[in-house]
Image 1 (cartoon, rainbow, N blue to C red):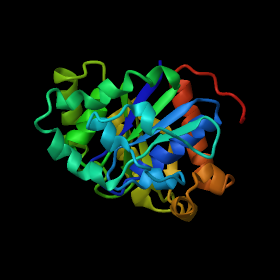
Image 2: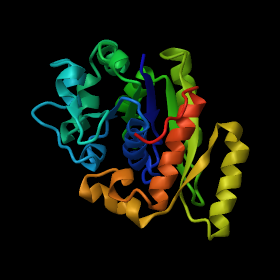
Image 3: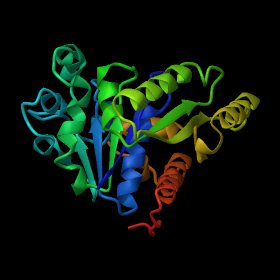
Image 4: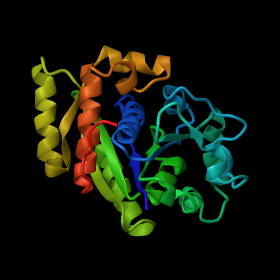
Length: 259
């Protein structure tokens, strides 16, 4: 059964989509059949892997007009698949309001395909609305990216409160997969102070891997490629590969040599 990881933080600009795209690509490169679900109406994770929504997207899936299998597309890279998003998802929260069991729509749709994948990564929108709630209801665990900046922990308390409520009400098995420090500038005292602050707050839940601030990471999406393809020797590619290996080790999976 594939492990479902929701990547979320309602604070924008923390590297959530960058992490969704590149972690998915690295897991696939490490031998894991991986599905990335783009649940953000902006669709940046979809375009970041060189794809665009066709006639059907995750919107149709949530509206129960087609199955998840109907929208999944094969990427240009082995073992990496994408369930694309489009702008219509922006209206999905309103349309789901009157739907019975609205928080479970994604979970229901994933049941039929989750056994076909080793990992399913969900890129959530930068909010704690109904789309994110669907992701948390469907997920086994949450990965939280936190930017290494002055207000790093701002809003994280709200996210943690939401996770606690989800555990109590709709998904008792939801765990914290890990906390990822992103956009680290190791040359500044502030960046290093934030690392210490987050590690004191989350302790062992913080990944040993940190993602550096990187121009190449910013360039890769415009080429529709993950960083391990766009510039495999860059600091960003090295960091995300290390993160992928750390995720596998935390899940008891032996890390294979690069395929």
